[in-house]
Image (cartoon, rainbow, N blue to C red; front, side):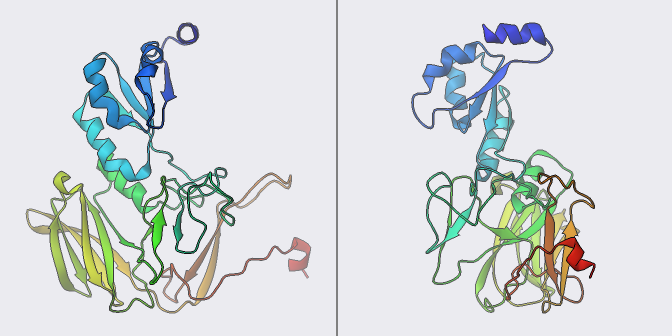
Length: 309
């Protein structure tokens, strides 16, 4: 048996592999799972309580999961000592499976990434961290569930651009941004999300209190405020014993004034295979990033010898 061969090669590590049926017969895996030390569930952790009743000795690890199911999966891990963890698909964006994790607007090609060509998508967008190393809001939320290294995070859900609608695909989460710059939405209601390990949070806009909400486990460590958009400064404040302890801030940017290019390395190999990912940041004069610049950005590849002329 392959499992025994693996144990002979390395007796220090448990034998595990990932299994899924995409909602088809699941119990057919019971004999195969019995050969493992830990049973890997791809997208099937919801089955764990019933499986534990049927096979009490089984140790379960979710080996792939949808990003949007972070809280539900965390709850199963915390509530059941036979469930030892949850791996999300994925931690990082990557080149391949083009369009997985994307969302789309009305009029765009609909459906999942495997159903059609989704050009100009050329990479996966299901990661908690993008190709440039930027942590998406879902990464901060997931980190708060499992760690206490950060306690407060503030972001804004992208509004539907009337008359269009945003649609999420299976591995997607709603597009949410660290930005309080939404030109064209003045006076319109935006959804502000606060992720918090504090018992309560307050939200202020231009020093005016918008509201206060609990952010305990019962609220999934999350508060959503509906705020009519006006430019300025948005502050989320974490409360302990009704004392304001920590603040997260988003500021409206001024007009686009600068273009900043930030490469992830200083040299690459001239072999036709090496890559450097370059972030293009549009900022105002104070360095505040403008997430949604109104003008298109054009990128051109220029030979080095042309730059030296």
